[in-house]
View 1: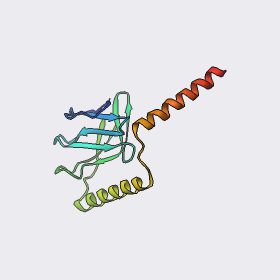
View 2: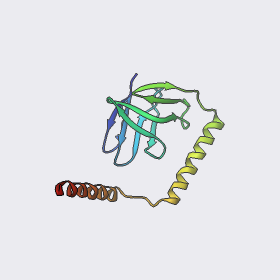
View 3: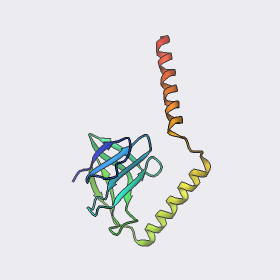
View 4: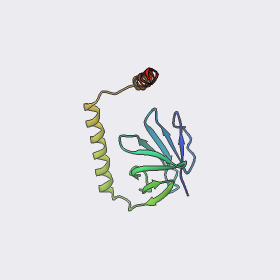
Length: 137
């Protein structure tokens, strides 16, 4: 089993097995659980996970812990290959989820959300500035 990397504008409603979907624009990712149970795993990128492509295969860091499904799977994906890790106990899973929620809340309080239009405008402005500096040479 190898997970392919697929860059998308939006995460589709129906996911294919062994595919990691990644929307750079919306900073999210998704896949079906590697154990085959069919559970949809959603990733917040880059807040909680990093998703990259290595030769067309997905790498996700840190590990994925499926705390909200009966399988309780825990694994990491490197260059498309699944490396299984020990499952979290119920107490560990609860602790991880609470820390993650607290981290998101803290980040939200510190930071005003930036719209995709604002990010796009900034990127266009940087590209325009770079182009101007190149043309002056």
